[in-house]
Image (cartoon, rainbow, N blue to C red; front, side, top):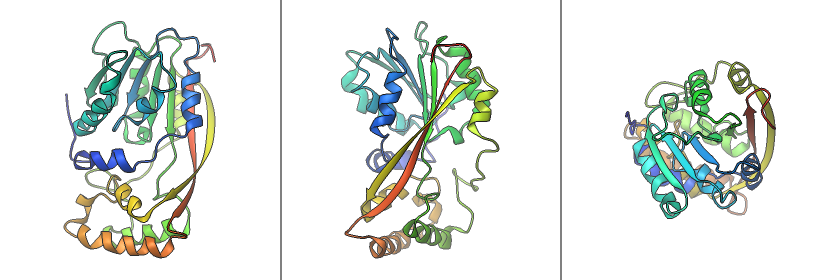
Length: 273
């Protein structure tokens, strides 16, 4: 097993506290994909602190097993701890490593739902889908989800915040433990079209969020483009400057974000929709 705690290990607690959850309608749609499945098994790739399974469990009570996959051991520990109360009715395994290298810990647990929320762009996508084709149940559903970030969101306050970050870190968006973010070379739809899961439907969920200035700072600490380690000792100067900027843009003490949470649901050709 390979763990990469350099990227988000120190920020696991902030990640759990400040990252926005999944829209309720998206969670209900995920649960609906398992209608008629007698013993659903969830494989959550890039699980982070376990947002997807934590959201699903209250509406998909029949889940019998969850596999959590992440390169970050600290994140997996947080996810496992959050799911500890369900262990009596739903078993949980963790796999530390790149998503495309996942192998089930025990036979007979073929996933019927494979989820990947806000993390597919970090992965070796064709290899991940090839792995999914090998391990998934015949009628499994693959769900690739996301809603961008405050870096990509278009608003006056996010534009000003982006400029402040760039004044410290340079024009290009930072990503990973080093380097910059170039974006995926092709669409996720094209990735799926070339995989075993070529029957795809797209679903969009508008989301209106309000942020407190202090919560935006917490969120930034969890991102690949503004996490503290990137600032090389200047983070203690950045955060007060960012807080002043955010407070100047806040209206009634809050900052508004209008996002769209997009979900691609993919199945094997000819499987039941």
